[in-house]
Image 1 (spheres, helix red, strand yellow):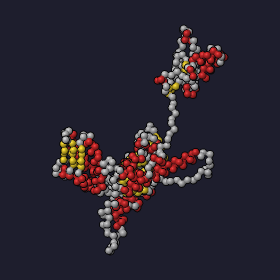
Image 2 (cartoon, helix red, strand yellow):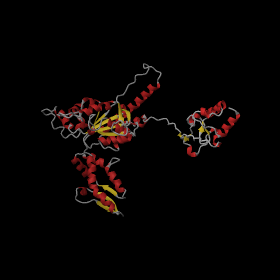
Image 3 (cartoon, helix red, strand yellow):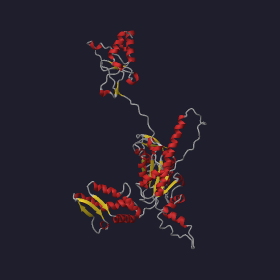
Length: 484
C-alpha cells in the first residue's frame, strides 16, 4: 500500500480509529459490506459513500485487486461496484447495493451467582420462631418441619459442593476422587384433621424461605393414558412458580394435598386409575429422577417446548386428613385392653384429641397406602385437632389474623372495629360445632360482618363499631359510637 492509499484511509477514518456514531446508535455496531463481519470482530470500520462500511481487511483486498488487475471490480467478492468515481459517469445503470442492517451489540452476561447459599437458610429455631408468628399451636409439627427443611437444604448444598469439586478435578482419576458420604432425601408426610393448618403451614414456610412452591391436588391425578392430570403436571406447576427457571425449580417445594384420596380402593372390580396406580407413578418423583415437562402448559404435545427437571433436590410434602385413620388407630390400640383393676379400657382413646399422634406405618397401610410410597416419606408429622382456646388465639394473635384483616378494612373507612372477649369465645365455640377447623372462623366472620360492612360506609359520622356477644347471638345489634 503506497502513501496515497494510506492518506485515503486516514481521511475516511475518524480520529483514534473510532466510529463516528450518533447517541441513538450506541446500542448498535456496524457490519462490513463485503465479509459481513461485525465491528466487534473485524475492528473499526471505514465509512464509504452510499452508507456502506468496510473493514480494513476488505479495503486492503480491494486495493490489492485494483493494483494487480486494473479496475476489474468483478473479481472482488460481493463488491461489483466499488469504484467511487462511477457515480460521476452518466448513462450507466448501476444497481444500488443492499446495505446490511445494523447488528445490536451483544452484551456479555454477568457471571451467574448460585441460586441458593447455605447462609440464606435460617437455623431450625429461627424457622420455628418465624412460623410461630403465623401459625398458632402445632408445636411438635413446626419443630419437625423446621428440622426437616433445614436438613434438606443442607443436603442440597452438600450435593452442589460435591459436584463442583468433582467437576473441577478433571485430570484426577476415578480412584483418586474421595468417596464422600451422600445424604439421602427425606420427604414429609403430614397427617391432620381438616382445617388444622397443613396447607397454611407449607405456604408460610415457602414464603419465609423464598423458594418456589407448587400446591397440587392429588384428587385430579390419574394414571397415564386416562382423563385427568398426569404426574408430570405437579412439576409443571413448580416450574411455572419458578418463572420457568429450571435451576430455581429444582430447589423448590412441592405440596401434594389430599394425598389420602389416592389410597387403594377396596372391593373394586374395575381398574383403579386414581388410587394405587397413582401412588406407584409418584414413586419416581419422590425418589428423584429426570422428568421432562412442558413449559408454559400442563399438556404435552409436539408443539409445546419441554424442559428436563431433576426432582432429586425437590422437597416433597404430602398432606391429608385421613378421616378413617382414627378408627384404625383405635382398633389397634384397643387390642391390648383386658379385664381387671389395672386393665386399659376400650373407650380410653375415644375422646383423645391427639389420637393421630399414635399412627404408624402399619395403620397407614391398613388405610390403603402402599409400602413403597410410605418408604419414600420417612418423616411423619401429625397435627392435632384445634381446641376452643386455640381458635380464639387464631382469631387475634397471628400476624395475618382474621380480626386484623377486618380491622384494617374498616380502618380504610376511618372506622375503628373492636371485638369483645365474649364475642371471640362465642365465635370459637360455634366453629367447634361446625367441625371444619380454622376454616369455620372465616365463614362465621363473613356471615356476621356482612351487614356491618354494608351499613357502615353509608354514615360518615360512625367512629367506632363494637361487636358484642348479644349481636352474634342475634339478641341485639353492635354497639356504635359516633365521632366526637
